[in-house]
Image (cartoon, rainbow, N blue to C red; front, side, top):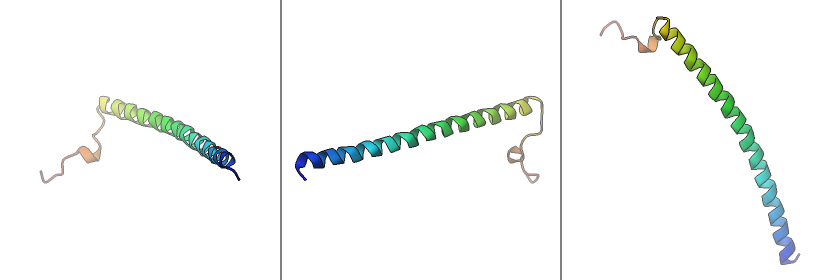
Length: 66
């Protein structure tokens, strides 16, 4: 195998790796967008409950011994 063929083979493998990584990044971007939507909805829901005078979450209530 001469030098040019070896380089062509390496380039082909690298191009395949880049395509695979690109697919992974695209999938992760979609997942992140979905998670951001969920977080936004949860934050809006929590803000609405707080605005309506709902009881604070137990994590924010001082213990009785204070």
